[in-house]
Length: 282
Image (cartoon, rainbow, N blue to C red):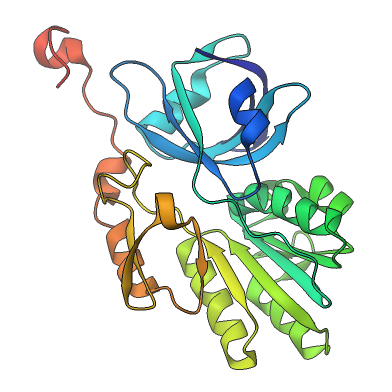
């Protein structure tokens, strides 16, 4: 059992949990994720580790209440527990000291997993520019935390309620046009945003990495549900990633796969009592 020691609402439908997980906190690195199961009949679903505190033995999880399981997770309160939290899973992001600037781009809830990356690159001695975006100012998250670990934080909102009106890719293009020497761009967010980031940097041959979060079940490479095509080869996001060369990812295929179960994801299944009196796991 993994105890929730703190709960915060960051914006409508987006919550932050700080969870006691000593072994995970001790071994976690930026870019890795965990897989949760709320109870014995619950589904398994992945969440990126947004932060970890080795001293307090906790990890921070950020999630948006979109499907049945994340809505159930959001109902839990401080002091309650999650049955299973497995991790850290996936390969850690490659952190290095570069001569030129590192740009970290987070779209929507992707600003949360961008934070440990920006912090790690800054601690490694890099100049870090962070770019985050959301539909409106009320949906921006991790703004202050990212500002604290970045040399410059740029913000885009669809309605211009904060920062520049438009998309994160427009801000990224402005930085490129300014003549800034860029060693690496890291992008995390909706698939369509990561694809747009890749197409923005491709003409300039700027190394660009993205963190993929496709449909995932076991998280150990056995089920194959999270397969993606990268450079014409099949990769499993859970064990070969989640970071991949964004210029090599087949985003068209990935977007099709992400839509496969969209109608089911938003529907809460009937309770066991409604279907069979609670006597089975259907």
